[in-house]
Amino acid sequence: MPANTIVSVTCIPMRLPFHHWSPAPLFAGRPRDKLDSALVRLETQDGTVAWGESYCVEPTALVAIFGTLIAPLAVGRDADDAALLPGMQRTLHNLGRSGPVVHALAGLDIALWDLRAKRAGVPLYELLGGKRRDRVRVYASLLQYYGDAERLDAVTTQALGEGYTEIKLHERTSDALAAVRRATGAGVPIMVDTNCAWLPDEAHDAIAAMREHDPFWIEEPLWPPEDDHALKQLKQLCRVPLAVGENAASTYALKQMIANHSVDYVQPSVIKLGLSAAWDIARHCVDTPVVCAPQVAFFGPGYLASLHLIAAQQADVALERLYVELAHVPYGKRVPIQNGFVQVPDTPGLGADPESELAEGRYAS
Ligand SMILES: [Mg+2]
Image 1: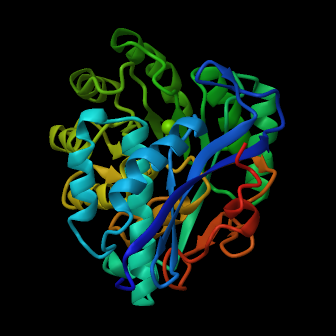
Image 2 (image 1 turned 135 degrees about the horizontal axis):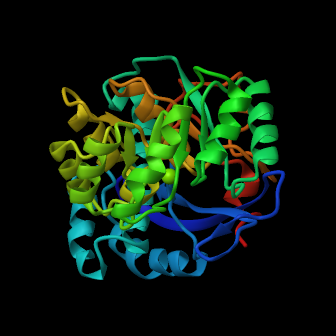
């Protein structure tokens, strides 16, 4: 069998217990005490192991998808075959154009990039045309505090004390933004992610109330997030930059947003759409007013893939980092965040493999 034949593709759930100095926030209607995604482990005939990451909130479903759909189509195939992933996308398209099957393919895509870079003996950014920066600014992305001004102030002050110079909130009120603005003072970028808080006729007034506290962008202001027409109208009216994209089902949807100028920042998620798709979007933004600012609310190979993308793309944007205390910090030693920056790894592939406790599934349940 040729050296680059895929011999296994498996999925290892990664459910990292976390603490954010406050009671557990709600996610998908239930209290959240773990941050979930899934590692994708790809091995070729010559023993090379590469890693990807898929969006995952239901590990049982994703593990089954890898076992019954992904592995049977990938094992035995040449990992260098450029038609492999596009072919699988077409073969599986009847199962839905978004959701867990697409997220599984995104993880496989990242693993194939890691594999290609490892086999070429180069850091992944070299396959993206080289790095434009040696280190990338990181922003502290706070979880929900439901407007609790005291906690917002304390956590923001803590993040600034650790060297972060940009903050993102997952809040919905101008009072919450005001509390954080008081903590940072003027000049510190504060992004406000509302997670699709408002219907189109509610959004304008809510954003207008925030304007005096100088939000850097408002993220996902509208429900439903794919209402491109309402988004464009809002952008023209509200005079605050808008950021959207993590819930987009395809590059097609994101390219529509760019073509329509309905957003200021477009936010592909590599663990939902894949690195190939996100890189396509980053290049598509060049020579447009829209900036590619990937969504990176995860910690594994997808985080490193996003780091390489940001290092290689034209626009200089910060890397998102959920600001929490994790039971285990992936790549904490190999690719640490120091003083609000992370060095772009120069070793082959993504730059680091998941630590053995992650690879062996210690945090799988
Ligand atoms: Mg978001």
